[in-house]
Length: 359
Image 1 (cartoon, rainbow, N blue to C red):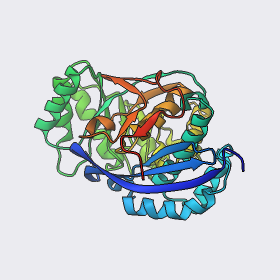
Image 2 (image 1 turned 60 degrees about the horizontal axis):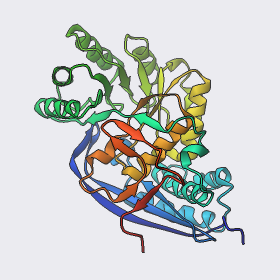
Image 3 (image 1 turned 180 degrees about the vertical axis):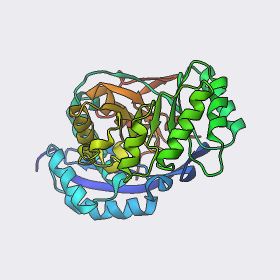
């Protein structure tokens, strides 16, 4: 048997409390209900991957992720981890619409493979860089909470704030203006998570402009299939990012005349390989890149950091959710100093280990 043959796969749920609810337009999560996957190679090397389903984002749940992993595991056992692209295709056939499951299993395979080779994951993706600077998210909520959060993150050195907008009944103009006052000099990125229509999105950015508030990016202002609405907003004065509209790599060229300026790449949408291909497709079409995630621990976020730093050229970095965890269930990975994420210490795999070894 080849030493890189996959001999065991284990998937189990883990829950992690958050300091505050992570709210987006479609709802909020007060606990990260995620999944840990462990892959073992024939030589005993173990790799770890995280699935982070976010129900308000795309409807995926922890139970669905575990069920999808059960379907995908038979095609993984006995496979050679070195054929990781072929293996990713097999996993996709077994669980085509289970992005979190695909991500967890692919991450664990790539971690085991590169760990055995003594190679950092960022090097596998190209080794362009080992450092990133992230923004931090201000979830949906009250104006007072938004202003307090902005001031707190500003005091900690963050100079880019991602503001969740589009919550029903919220006065987003007042919230964003309060954030701008509380965090002077910060770049403001607004994320509607597909909750607005084109008229509402344009009205929001114009109202903020009239109040002297500059918006650096407006992410997914309209419904995922509303490409005409996306085109209308992208023709305005604020750069627009596609997120929900670009789940698979094949979605990127299909954006066509919608002409967003940026594509938000997330390994949790459809797996690591699909995210890599989406980034390459966007780059080939001259679109700028953003790296983001769901409500993920440092395991998945370090994997995303390795992808973005390894490829290089990401204009926007949104890898902040480990800071929302009360007790981080993993150790290792990137070192964080304020908004700076440093991958220098990652010397094999993604460098992340569970605090308590899985049984």
